[in-house]
Length: 382
Image (cartoon, rainbow, N blue to C red):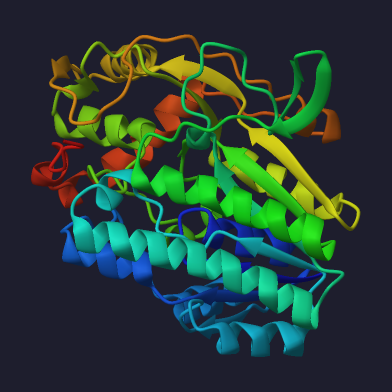
């Protein structure tokens, strides 16, 4: 297939670029380095310094013999994006190109405005570019399980059947986002649904839980091909943060009571899920929503797991509860449905002790680069 990947320099974007190219797809990789810029501005650089997109593509070709067409520009510029879509006539566009940090979006007015404008502009521009220049293109959009919040009912896959006063209908599952970033993803979904039913576009929206890990088939060949692995309070997901804290000798920071439960998945499973969505496109006028996770854990569960494995490796891991900087429920019901991708062929890589140990081993090799001052929360919701 001919595939454009938006946000190709990201934690998920770059591994997807390599995975798709290795499988023989023609890949165009687009980014404007917004995440790298924000990381520098907030002193939140990734653990392992990495080459830029052009150099990554050159290393990838030398290692794996596959070409990637890199384009560096701002996707908020509609005309640049439209020109690319017109040139490529893609079969699929994978849309990762959003400011992905909840803490950053909550840190001030300018950060919130940047998040709102960037995330909605890129989604809006993508929909229009497809409508104008590639109406048969299948858009695979990365959403987030954070759109749903933590309702006291089971979370269905995007849609819910409602019976009210003797009548029935099907609606988007109610949303209750916990940050401005997650709210932009809710707005994305509403925007997409409007244009799907208005223009007959075809879109798959993947509601993804937090991702962990570094290892992919392509990156294992050369560490310069690793994704950007953040451990800071701005961009670091909780599993990756805990791994670095364990190695650095910093007590694992459990926010509040630690009962916050979410659905997680391995980086390798993100690649599977996005690939399955792309290879199984929906019909015109259809918005398919899939919950992208493989298992659920509370923060306490994760801390216990990292401590157990870390202690076996001689790291003497400590766990410490701290005041919760976020406004969120710390104990709640959480039962998301996630059968769609499994039925399509997803073969999960679970967070076993072996997987945990393998991540800790990689982090330990780069222990000298850890800056403990980046770990503690610097942003409060209120």
